[in-house]
Length: 362
Image 1 (tube, helix red, strand yellow):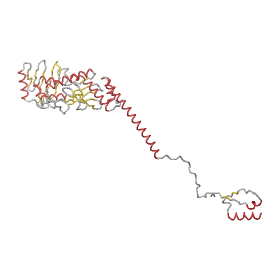
Image 2 (image 1 turned 60 degrees about the horizontal axis):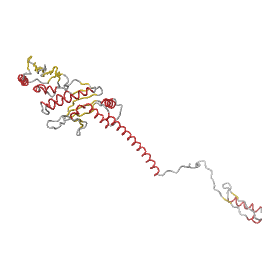
Image 3 (image 1 turned 120 degrees about the vertical axis):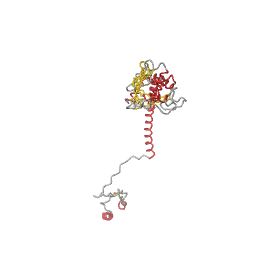
């Protein structure tokens, strides 16, 4: 029997390389002497694991990952994040708009000193940032406070012109200049009621220094348009002069100071200016004839090139001709009588041909 078993082992070793495979023998259960001799040897081959060679790298097991999200899920979260930022932006904008509305309400309820403080903070010092609508509202309320006396003449915002105040007799357009000053420009209708397109720069307001300046050229232009071009009437100019003097007086009560100007009728008129031409003989003769026909006036020749027109109440107009420069120098003096230049020529229209020229004052 031992020889037979030895024979089986020899056959097995000739068929299988025991160095490459691992042989697992199952326990042979003997049920009898006959079965021990005839029992089968069950051989189970296992997977052969070859050692890595020098030139081969041993495979590294892949790490375990989470299952990737589907494209639908990624899109959902992207959209959700975007919607969140959009909503936050809408909230921020709504909060700004609400704050701006509240500020505009404050402006509407403010008196002039408060409006002046806001004007300086926003336009001059630039401490506050507000919307364009709020800036427009501030200018509207501020300019209304300056022109408040014109309420008695139907002061209202124009429906046709931007940033324009209308009255029964004229309109004033306002705009911000130099980022801190307000310029009012004048528009007057013709006697037929037609509006003229050209605007005369009239009043410059400087809230930073609380100073205001009437543009004298505008006064001369009005006189020229009235007496030479016949665009306006003397009555229109007179009403304008009276109402604008009310505005200037009101602005002074608000704390503004004015440079001496030709529209002011609260003080005597004392004005000297030079015309770029010599007064012709006919003009001088016409003035002489008018003064001789009126007992209140007088005309005196002081020298060959010097004449004095006496107008009563010690008011005078001195005419000085200069042959070398071909110019005429005029001196208007109302002495103690308060008059604006518009009122002066309204009272003495016969002096207009002598005294007016398109290039009188800058």
